[in-house]
Image (cartoon, rainbow, N blue to C red; front, side, top):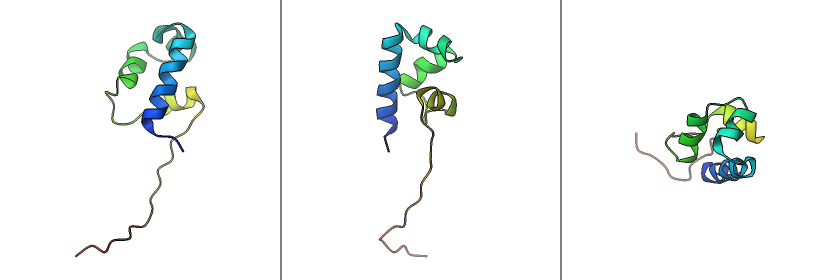
Length: 71
């Protein structure tokens, strides 16, 4: 598994390799400002379209806590 920060770094590098955010976004059918805002960390989570364009998918995982809670 990778973190959202890792995925943002991958996105940033892919955009650099494509020559610009605008070019990478166009190649992947995405809005340039959406990609730019994602790289900047302005969204709480990275959207499924960007994940898919990078070859990833988001999985939410719940694990048990070791601490007992009151109530």
